[in-house]
Image (tube, rainbow, N blue to C red; front, top):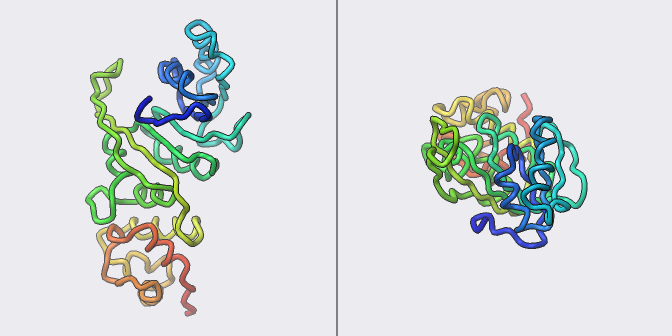
Length: 242
């Protein structure tokens, strides 16, 4: 809980609470916990578990039975912090979806597969830097917040885990969808220069080079060398007429 830096007035969003071990730790530290659980059986059990273990805090819990990737709204006050052991196979899409859906989320602390943690927190130029790194950086400052060994889980998984912390900041100037489209195109062929990798996005290699130069970016660079601000600036350039 110390790593999450929760405040007494926080409304915490938890995804995938399962049997409620994290939920029971969050309830004393926050004003309210909204737990999104896709499994109806677990969603039904969670209020009972809290009622048995911490009846004094039961009124702080709201359970939403839903797929976090498909949530469009949540009941009650808007969440201010995301604290969750995210399902490893959908961790990045869930994180990005919730950050876009809920602008009131100003902090996040998530437990993910160690490899995913490395990708999310990687800076430009690092071997792990890629699409998750750039898209997460659109929303805030991302850092590794610790490693978690597999032996703390039961049953023990066959992968190591890592904590990732995000503190929201204003996004770069530009359009998010347009910027993400450039990011996807640049990393689809990450071994190629941006002039080649962005040829389809821009309409041709020459058009890609023109837009890169308009953004002040060397066409010979590769996608992993650009920051999220660079990508936003590139996305904002005018299309080249054929």
